[in-house]
Length: 351
Image (cartoon, rainbow, N blue to C red; front, side, top):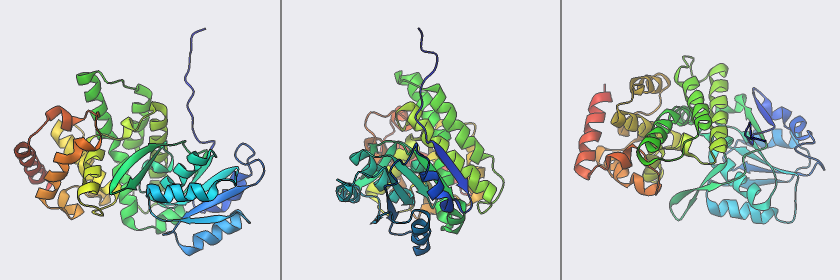
């Protein structure tokens, strides 16, 4: 009998609403997630103290571990601390780096992961990828996607505005990532997954066309949904390809050359606009307008970078993802050409 459908692993529960953290206990009582009642929570060190109180109320008696940053060392330390406990689930609570640490640790010890996002900085809240730093380099690690995703809009709204702007850049950058994937299919016959691409594009377009302010709950709900669907797109594809192209190569190069420049999604936003400019994409002006509307960085200067620094990042970008084919690999520009293109990009959009 012919296979007529694919199986797609996705979260059993997605809860996006104000005060969602209060529902955590009810979500965990779902016997598909927790059977014995034994859960462990990992909370990012930067999360407000009041969040810990909410977690202790929602999951009384659960051991709580504090995790710091988004390093592979932190992920290994958490996994080592949990070995032998065998909880039904590990609940990660915090921003992107903390969730990636907890997600990696949950996979390492073989337990389901529940993602509780307090910010909307990037699509790691629902993806099968953990981006972790080791020896100054950020690497992407395949992990099990979360069994449940909770986004508390009250906590998201109280996060620094740059975190939400980062999430906007991350979601909209899917447009550039999919365009790179199409280019790779056409030029080097790379396998292409139309379903995963459609999911990534749908997520991006939902944010691209948003007119409400970033503090509005309806906007935040749209952004949260887009980041969740982006994670599902990567799960469907079995790769980060639908959400990661030249835009992410540039961001990873910035992280390596100039650590601490900006949030991941902010760097990705500039990379996506530049890559779209290089391709002459018909949506480039729409992307620019969206970023302007929501205060998302568009140019190197918005990241605190000068032209020379951004040129260096573009030069180094392809080496961050060996074997990935994007507009940067396609054009294979030398330093002089990259400098000319960056100058033209800045001249075009610096107005």
